[in-house]
Amino acid sequence: METGYQRGKIQEESLLYERRKHDGSHPIIGVNTSAILGRFSGARHRTGSLFRGRKAEPVGAPERFPRRNALQCPAWLAKLRQVAIDSGNVFEVLIEAVRHCSLGQISNTLYEVGGRYRRSM
Image 1 (cartoon, rainbow, N blue to C red):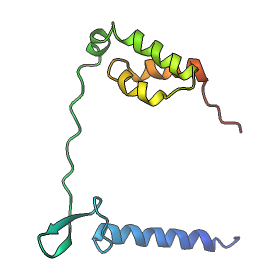
Image 2: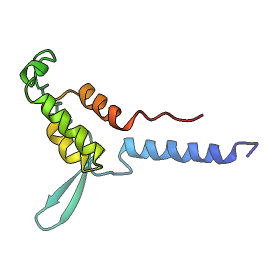
Image 3: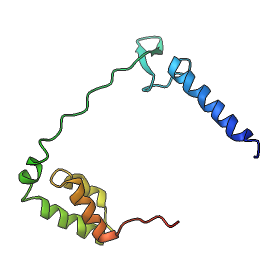
């Protein structure tokens, strides 16, 4: 432990892995390789840069989002609050609530019910 042997070995292996991943000698489907399915030959691997799609366009200007959802947002926050209090499936309600409420509104609602996590040191 004093000489740092374990840490050095881990760092060496990590560096070797990253080098092999980037130079293509260690193919990872979807990261540095795409699978090409041949009709009779099975899967072949093609290395190289993969196409990186653009991020989806934003829903709209941030100032329009609250105005557009002003009527639905309080109802979804109330439903989310009640489901959290009842220990129900929050995820199911959350999927629909994000269409009408901002992240800050959803977070504050959940903080009101469950409190904030504080790491004890």
